[in-house]
Image 1 (cartoon, helix red, strand yellow):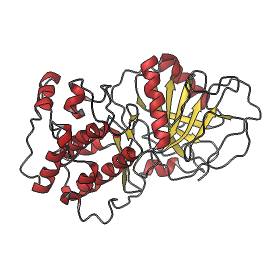
Image 2 (cartoon, rainbow, N blue to C red):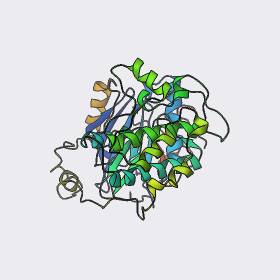
Image 3 (spheres, rainbow, N blue to C red):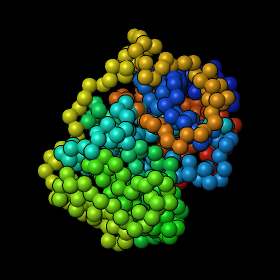
Image 4 (tube, rainbow, N blue to C red):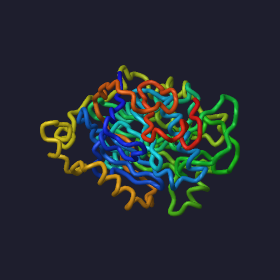
Amino acid sequence: LSYIKKNYENSSPGRSDLTGLYHLGRTLGRGHFAVVKLARHVNTGQLVAVKMIDKTKLDVLATSHLLQEVRCMRRVQHPNVVRLFEVIDTPTTLYLVMELAEGGDLYDYILRHEGGVAECTAKRHFAQIVRAVAYCHQLHVVHRDLKPENVVFFPQQGAVKLTDFGFSNLFQPGTMLATSCGSLAYSAPEILLGEEYDAPAVDIWSLGVILYMLVCGVPPFHETNDSETLVMILDCRYTVPEHVSDDCRNLISRMLQKDPCRRASLHEIEAHHWLHGLDNVLLSPEAPPHWLSAALSLSSPRSGVPECGDLVDTSRAVEEHTHTHRGTSSRHKGRMCVFVDYFLSVHKEQTHDLRFPPGPGIIITQKNPHSDTTLFGHHLSS
């Protein structure tokens, strides 16, 4: 697998956009400091998602989260984790080039299945999520924001993948973490109480919430206001509908334990009887949606993409990003990935500096040759 470093024969020092690398399209999602856009690679015509982070708006905490997101994503390379293809650093903007998931996210999928997903299908989704989290933990990466919105579908692969490592962190087994982060409905009691916590245990709690939502269609802890929801979580008070099988009910209860020491380990979850009999955890591959097939066509690069909009000139898109980004949304649907089954081609021109030794399949490209060799002045060591 090889990746391109684009030749900039005619480029001037200090350029600050993606001209010559990617054509940017419509906005896929928006956050406090970032915009995610559909993009087409100039050389191959293939589609990716580009997360554009406005560095000028980042405070110390946000910068720390961003550094950790990049650090953790370059470490985690797994079939059930969204791929980070390339990181492009400019004086004002950081661009994360990632897989594009055309199948939407697990949250919307659950909403379309009133009363929950059939268990035979739910266990295939859940087994893939567990496999991704187990791999992250083996590399001492904790996600800390596991929720259906951060699980996305790749129908052509028959796969679901984990995304959004904005709250992720590295941990050492046996060492407690202290930062409170994540989303209320999926957060473990110890995080909400502001206590130090065991990193793997908080992800396992969130896995319990995800499995409950998959088979029940609603969150286990949900009231009309946050205060009542908080009390439900701290009391670990929930009910499981009668249609859920005993094995599935047991697995949920093993993960949703108030005492983190009593929660099932990932090894115990993978070995649980409910997940037995899965010779292949992947779903049957599906054909790509019509809009993606048309968008991937090099002969008609602007046709057939009603859901994503026509791709636009990069300089105009960057200007649009600069003037319109306000970062008010708290939920970013499909925000950082879309499936694209391709390899970026190789180019041997050496006009860019590598920011740090890249992980497998990752290039860190510096667009301003006069800036220093660290990201925001921070060394991104593993």
